[in-house]
Length: 284
Image (cartoon, rainbow, N blue to C red; front, side):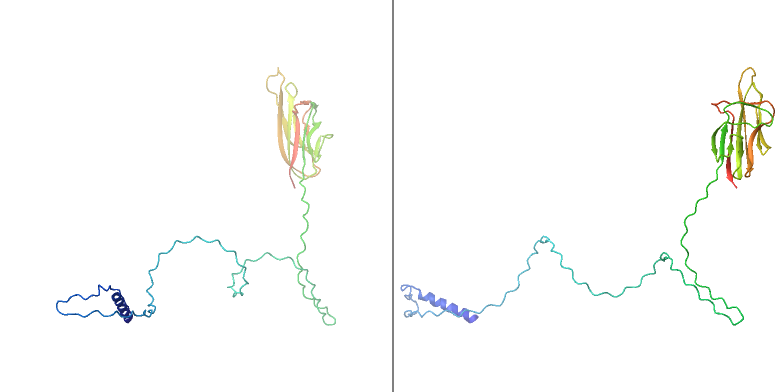
């Protein structure tokens, strides 16, 4: 490389000398000695051989990071790949809860008959067969009917009675079971049990006060009696009532009767002042 540079310098100098004008080529006077004429310029040299490529330069500094590009549009979903190989078996889980009982299985076969014993004696009984499955659930039976008995009757007209006369009634509000007979005016028990009976008796002030008894098969249970009080110059009305509970059997009869002669029981068709009621509390 150094020899090449030196060659270029020489070519430049020779070229410069060849371009000097003739006048300028005259020698300058020398104060000390004489100098001959200038020589003939030399032939220009040929161009030098091009130099070889230099060594690569060092890497430049790293440039600044550019701005982040926008997110691209997601590409289409690729095709589903084939299933991978089956993995190893996992750890066995805890035991689950017990399931519901299964359906009833078919009926088991009968057990084998026992073998006969020796001659002259009875054979030994065979072993019991396996129990068969439970039979199907039966249909729901009929609910027992609730036994009922109740009545409510009243008078629509007044009555004058003597000792032992049955107090009569001519209208009914309720007669469940038809146990009260408006012809005999008596209640006849058809369901054994405990019964409750209630009655109300009315009378006019200027009439004889009635004394009425509740009777069971001619046995007096209780009474209701009106008492005279107040001003006798005016006509007014009085009422008394009573209630009783008794145990009855089928066939027992209950009714109301007068306890003395000339008793006058008052009522009207609209007010229902005299009434008789009863009902079954509970059957035996």
